[in-house]
Length: 87
Image 1 (tube, helix red, strand yellow):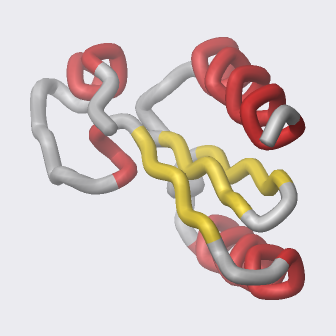
Image 2 (cartoon, rainbow, N blue to C red):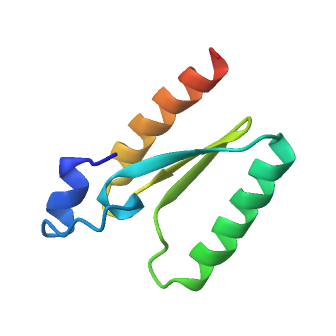
């Protein structure tokens, strides 16, 4: 997905990936999703400013652009958590 706020913060440079807004990754098991989340956190810690926001819920991971503000990311995370809990 693209979020115009992320694109604006990135000076309009759309990479077509998470930096443009975000994505949701879904895995067959909770263990697989947790392993992916651990890997993402490992990568994020190696990047000076992090690579964005990653939220785990059940077998899904919400990945958001580093160009979103923490408040914008929390809004997405709340909707994501509600959607996954209701599924």
